[in-house]
Image 1 (spheres, rainbow, N blue to C red):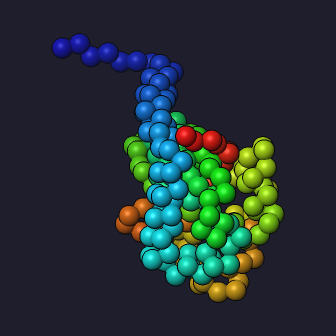
Image 2 (cartoon, rainbow, N blue to C red):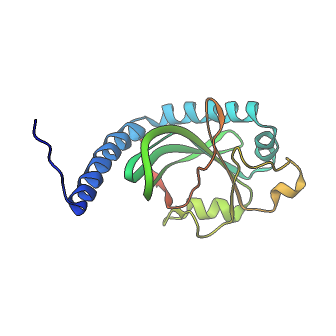
Length: 190
């Protein structure tokens, strides 16, 4: 049996290549849906979130628009990537389609599939998403991520921000998922 030990820079390069391979297999799967499928899955995802969380129901009634990503694939090993397609809804009607994508670097390994729902509370947030340059997290409107560790009540104080984001999956809200390092861009699915 031959044991090959690579120097640290070579190990880092191999880790980077492995994570890029994992990310490249996840991204096409997240983008391979038609407009009709994205819309149907988006509406069902929003219904599920509203059924699980009273804060989401309250925000949905007050929101100017809702951006729903039914399936975001996130994966990596040291270097990571995430991507998914979603639908922009205004009062239940489709306004457009968007892709959320981003990358990260740090201590991480594995893959996960989750949903993201963003409640756009005012015209400023809607305009920022619909602008030709896309929406980059950390710039533009103020975003509050509501996850398992957030215990905010659904009351009038929850309309102070431009965007409320809910990362979740079939098992409920998820912890430690943010929009940092992501970009939301308009797409034209078939």
